[in-house]
Length: 388
Image (tube, rainbow, N blue to C red; front, side, top):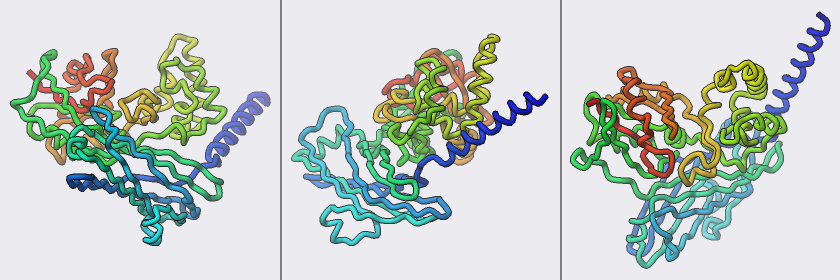
């Protein structure tokens, strides 16, 4: 009895140490999110202004930002070497004379407050209008430094700026794929990101084609991207625990890397991760599989490591959507459509994360078993399923 108590006591001490070490790791509370953007074009140039919001949710800590710079990358159907890009970045509180000098002034984000950062891009070309027709989006890579009690942390994030949105598809132009007791229509969109509103995207690309009885499905990854639920591995410092646990997973798993595993630990904590891992190893020896993902929760299955999705997010770790049930209920109520959030792969596995009340889940699984949306760069995150 004494030995059992001692083992339990030591186990509790170890878990407490891991939890404290996890929670006290050097990190910055600052959150950077895109708010809005606008595009202004002339015959010789195009100016794109992006508004970013930096929030500090910490109740006491004040954080300084001594550096902030951006590198824009054009993404289009062809290379555009003639397009020259000039950038200017400034925070809302700095002196206008420094803006003219293109000098970014260090500033403080106080506890429970926020500040805005304006990024201005000017694209110059002798044939700018023709170039813009071939430009799909701009990947805005952001390098910024956080300075505070945790020390100096270099951060790296990316945001897609959609420069070209596709036209709404008309019923007369729709090409349906014949499925099992249904017709299937993959809907092509522009590259989606946190500057896109999911409700507006679904309404824009389905309004002219949707009929009563249809079901709209959206991939869980595109939805997560619009929610801003992706991380750059450069911002993830895998712990020794993450590096050890990841070695037990199949090489193709998104949890088989230190950063992928650390992402899960950051979500559910080290204690739950260890308990799930130990239980899974033990029960797998008894022939029971899939235990880790059941114990670790939904996000364990939904995390996509780098290369797991289409460019420019192929260098990011993408999480699952935050609350797919609430999303489906909101869409169904506001747009009056039947919708489901799905996770589909090339092996024919269809997982329905959430669906509005009138959705026929059996029909959805039948329709998506061939993965009509694809998992490469098809850019068809929406699929319309029409019962035959």
